[in-house]
Structure formats: C-alpha cells, structure tokens
Length: 147
Image (cartoon, rainbow, N blue to C red; front, side, top):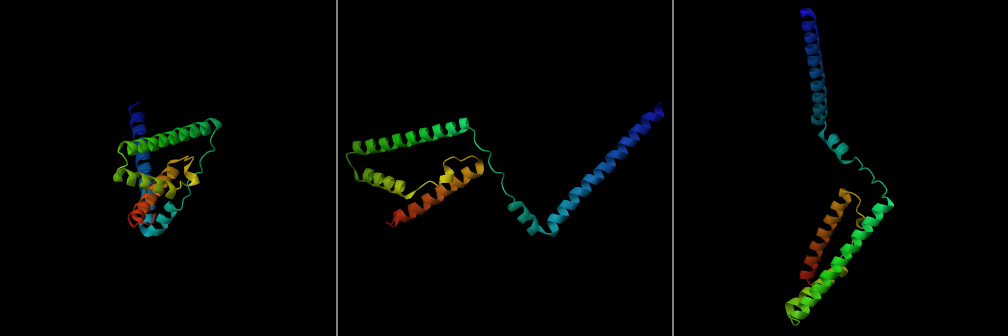
C-alpha cells in the first residue's frame, strides 16, 4: 500500500517536471523568435485584421437610431440655449462671436458616415480622434481668420 502511494506521487512529480520544462521551452522559443526578429513580430501583430462587426439586428438598429435622434435633440436644445443666452446678453460682442464661431464649426465639421453607427470600440475611437483632429484644425484656421 505504501509503495503504491510513493509510486503515484513520484509519477505525478515527474509529470509536473516534464510539463514545466515543456512550458518553459515553448515560452523560451517564442521569446527567442521575438528577440531574433522583432520587426517581423511587430509586423505580424500590427497587420492582423480586426474581426468584422456582426450585422446588427433590427432591434439594435432601432436602438441606435433612437440614440442618434436623442443626441440630435440634445444638440438642438443646446443650440437653442446658446441663442437664448445670446439674446439675453443683449447682443454683446462676445456672445455674437461665440455664436459665429459655433456656426462656422457646424459648417466646417462633417461627421464621417462610418461614425453614424459606430458598432465597435475601434470605430468609436477613430471617430473621436477624427473629431479632435478636425476641431484642432478648425481652431487654428479660425484663429488665422480662414474657417
């Protein structure tokens, strides 16, 4: 009985050692490949194509359309509030300049079509970056008097 216990324990230990060596060797080989040719490893990592987004269900499309309508309504309310604030200010130069700049931005920035139904985080990130870059270009052009 005692002999069987030690035989099983010894077999398990030998198996663990062999498995550990195998895992170490596989990891070492992968690290070696990366160290030997880092440019190829980088190319392989950066050229992998993202998975295409699954087609949206009709329910999901309706939900997105509803969200877009709510966002448009919010933008309209903000524009109305801006106009109301402008009127309350008695047409001050600063309020007029802000309203002029807001109208110029609305004419300048056109949201890309792919940003309307941003289905995944990558697209959302690209759209946010596009917005930020466009806003910076607009600010520079507006400051130079060329919107």
